Length: 394
Image (cartoon, rainbow, N blue to C red; front, side, top):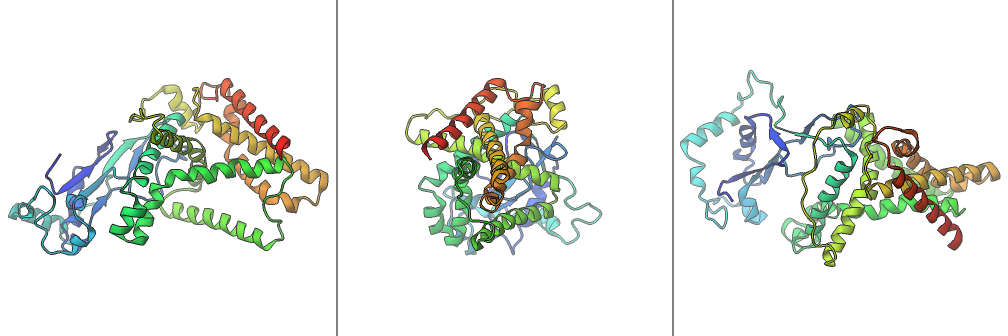
């Protein structure tokens, strides 16, 4: 749609906060030391109206390319990476865009100005946010947004442009698999959903699937668990986050995986099978409701509506709680059994602590944001059915 050598991509619900943002991007794009290997310049995605501890993990503290607020060099869409090294950049695309217009005296004068070593004198360098957006304050809107985001990567992952095939050939093995991590991101729903149910159901059935506390393999499990969460915490804090925001971030990661990522993966499979080919793009609602806004500021999870997306969340919360209680009873009755059930108790207990807002919404709240009684009853019934199934067939 444009012959411009630089393209800005921006979400439709985001807006510019600093008119000097293009000049900042040009500092890098027109730098003669960088330009041959530079593909894009991305600005952090910032939001207004985030709650104190960001209960829905909407600040996106973990860095990755999200396209919004990103200045792309247009030639990267038409050339292979090897051609970036060529000094002859006159043929930028299939449209034969000539670069000489960029090298006009007027443009070069401006480029030299913004790239100069004294450009930031008497200014607060990068003190103004480039782009802002508003966050949804409703849990269902957050989950629907993540579900929509999950379908796109899968469409790329299983296309001829898959990072594993096309990506590895054009970018190399390591970079291709690095992009594959994001392309196959929704598939995390499979192992995490298994971990949300299997250890707890096994605990209810009296089956031990993890090694005993004194086994060497148990140390491996603990090192992997503590190492992964510890690394994530350190990176989050170094990125300007707080412990409270990190806790909500890892909690929402688990909630998103068993709900929106799982739902998005199922929709993609149905679409591939031709069963559901009417998937549409819906902009996430950012409408402000006074009561919802009040509960959001109080950092209460907003359920309040009948949605199938809440069913796996509430069911997993119930199974984790029942499994933890069964584990406590097992230790109470047999004493020495604790070394067998400790790892599964740890998984169930961690789930219980993370699911506290769900228990509140199911049983302890009376406001409009609580989990609807129909969904509570359905989730309890499914949890009971799963537990009964395990006792009957295992």
